Length: 354
Image (spheres, rainbow, N blue to C red):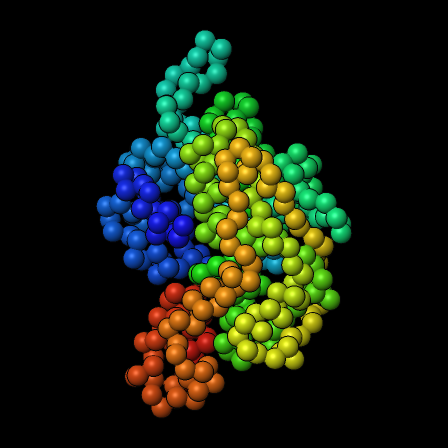
C-alpha cells in the first residue's frame, strides 16, 4: 500500500501539520497535500505553551502524533541543550496542552476523566535502548540505556509520556523505530548524504571502519505501523517497529555506489563519531502479533526506489548536467530547482555552477 493509498483510507480526517521549519524543514515536500481544508500547515514552536493551547482550542484535536524532534546525533554532541529544549520540554508542553484540552472532569478515583476517543502518540527511537553487541535484539522490555545527548533526550521524552499515563491516566502510546530512510530525507543522515555527495561528485564519508550496524526501515512502512498503533494499539503500550534490514554502514555505501553506477574508490573513511553505538536491531514481534504489522519493503528495493526518486527529474548523466548548466541554465535550471525543493539539496550546490 502506497502513501497516497494510506491517506485515501481516511477521507474524513483533517490533519494539521505543526512545524517550526528549522534548518531541516522544507514545506515544499508536502506542498501538494496542503489544501487548507483536509490538510493545514501551521508554523510554530511546540515549546510555546500559549501557542499550542491556542491550537488545541481552535482545532479540537482528537489525536496528537508527535514526530517533532531534533534528531541528528552529531548535532546533539555539539549542542546538547537544544535537544533538551525541543525533545523534552517540547514534548512535555504538548502533553500539558493536550491534558488541558482533553480532561473533562474528575473520576471518583481522583484521576482525571478524559474526552472519548483521544490519544497522544509519541514517535520515538530504538536508540533509547543503547547499543547491542554482535547478537540479540531490542525488545519493548529492554532496559533504557541511552548513550548520546540525542538518545538521552528522546528517552526523557518517553519517560514523560509514560509518567502522564501513570499519573493522569492519559491515553498514550509510544512507537520506537529503527533507522528510517526514504524520499525527502534530509541529507545529513547517511543514505541521503551519500546520494547527495554522489550527485555533487564528492567523496563518500564513512565513520570509523564502517562496521557499525543499523536496522533500516522504509519510511512508508513506519507510517503504516504508526497508523496501526494509533487505531488499534493498546493504550499505555510501547511498540517496537523494526525493518528486518540489518546492514553495516560500509555495506550500505557500497550498495548505493553499485545502484548508481559509481566506483567504491569514492569512499573515504573519517574519524569515528564520539560514543558511536555499535549495533541496533529491533524485534518487532509484539506489533506483528498484536496488530499484524510487518515491514513490506526490502532494503535493496527501498534503496532502488529512493535513488530512482532522487534522480527522477534528471534524465541526463550528472556530469553532463554539470557541464550544460553553465551555458543552458534557462533550460535545465527549473529541473534542478525542483530537485532542490523536493530533496532538500542546499543552494550551495547551485552556487557551485553559477
